Image 1 (tube, rainbow, N blue to C red):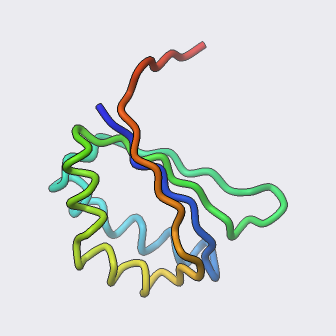
Image 2 (tube, one colour):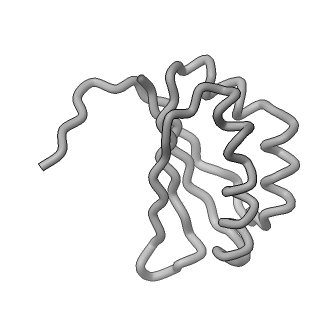
Length: 94
């Protein structure tokens, strides 16, 4: 498993979330298995998404897809995304 971690600012969280949710099928095509969304406590329009994906290649193909770029415009992403790709090493829950 791998993670695609994205951090960016949006104009309006609710509007962004609606578009994010509409991309569920596209994420599945690229091997997504889940995600976590975090919001900055000082700025609720600064979001970080930890996407759980089967492979780094799937994450990269999603990241370069025209569907994603169009959705980001529609969703009101206002900053250049900070993107990190990582392979899982250890995942524990307490």
